[in-house]
Image 1 (cartoon, one colour):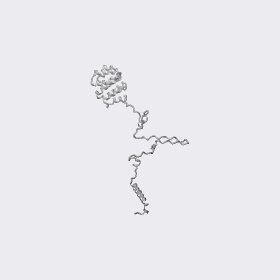
Image 2 (cartoon, helix red, strand yellow):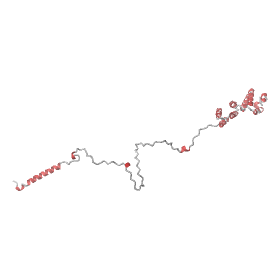
Image 3 (cartoon, helix red, strand yellow):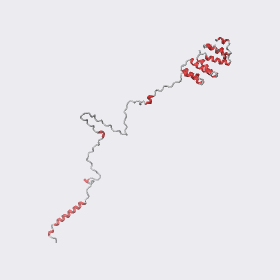
Image 4 (cartoon, helix red, strand yellow):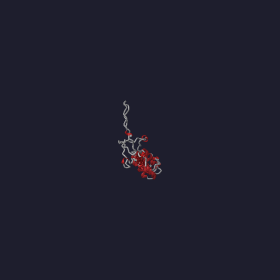
Amino acid sequence: MPRLSSLPRLPWLIACCSFATFLTACGNEPAPTAATEGGKPPGSAAPSTKAIVPAKSPDSAAPKAPKPGGTDAPAVAMAPSKDPGTAVPKPTGPSQPPPATPADEGSAPSEPATGPTQSELLALVRKKKTSDADAKQHLAQAEKLGASKRKLARAANARGQALVVTPERATPFFEYARQIDPKFPEATFNLAKFAANRGEIPQVKALLREVADRGGKKLLDTIEFDPTFALVANDRDVQALK
């Protein structure tokens, strides 16, 4: 049987055991996490209550206030940065001609090419090395350039005299001179020589009569000294032409 003095300690022991049991139960309970606080389901974050501050653009900086003295110029707004992917439209206006280059400035305007003059053409006609076909073309070109009939006749007659050793080449130019200038007697006189060399007396007399009609009296005075006309030098008709 327990002592009476120990009876008052029983309630105290019971109380101590109950408190110890409570502490043990509290120590085994898991600590609440952020996901389970406030009864909110996991994965739902609480909305932030902080205000969103817009980022400041360097282009939108506020202009500086001028100093009281008034010497500072107002701040100039910076041009927006160019985006390499955005094409900047070019200002429209009247088109300007490209600047002249040094080569263009130093070069004189080209003059139209000019052909030979009539004097140069007639000089080519007189040369033996000029072909007969080219000589005829030169005569035609000189005539188009306004060469006189007497100049054309003299050039053709000079070529005929240069080709006298080849009568078949000289005759066409004597005939040209005879036809181009009706008052030119030298070409007809040279044709009379060719007829005398062939022994064509009637043709010689007819050509010498034409020389007289063209005013070639001085040429007729040389007949008696020219052996080419030996067959007709003493002819009465020929003597009458002098």
